[in-house]
Amino acid sequence: MFKALFIIGTAIASSLAMALSFDADVPVTIKMQMEADLAFIGGIQGSGQTALHKEVFGDVSGITYKKFFESHIQTVGISYCRNGLPVACVFPTINENKLFLTQNFVKLSIPQTARLMVIYHESRHAEKENKLLAKDIGFSPNWPHANCPIPFLDNQGRDKTIMKSGEKLEGLPACDTSAYGSYGSSTILFKNLSKFCRNCSDKIKMDADMFASDQLSRISDAGSLKSMLVDFNEARLEGYAE
Ligand SMILES: [Zn+2]
Image (tube, rainbow, N blue to C red):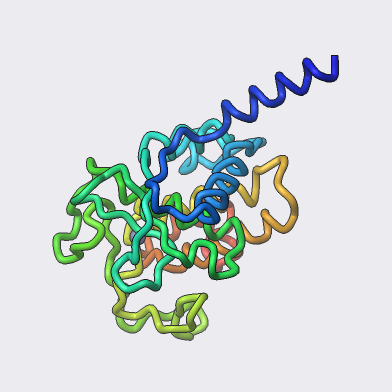
């Protein structure tokens, strides 16, 4: 009986594993980390979702996230990604369905939630149907970033900065005007995990909320930002009347 349950459990676990191929030169540490991260998100169980999450992804569930990822990315390679600083990147003009990881994926002590946020951010850039909305940004032609405004201040008049480095965001191509772009959609995903994941630890939920709030601050269009805050039921917290 126990053995039978184990076999069923294994079958379910392997059905949740993502069908993904890795280039031969991807280091085994990176491959194992990526597989563990995808297995984690593939096992999420949710208890609801916001309207924006329903629209972009569907329900909060591992099945939803597995389907989304697999419909965007089929292969993983290793790359320097422009300047060696990012954790991951895509080059959709070369291969729309390939995600490149850098050594930073395992070298930097990044929480699992932040690695997954990057993976889903890059997956959004793999959507060729959302191409060239801003022709001046060449490296991510699908759902391209917007340039952050100058100055780019929070509601207390302080410069908004990159969480990791403290660098000012003003003028950098590191914002979204839409709720549906790479920053916007990953914010929606992780805000929903923080609110509706039934089988996540408190640490995962806290990280999901913290990183999602950081990404949310990069939505530079006031209307899009407000619609997201309303969707997350956080508009009142930010001083908006609902
Ligand atoms: Zn991006």
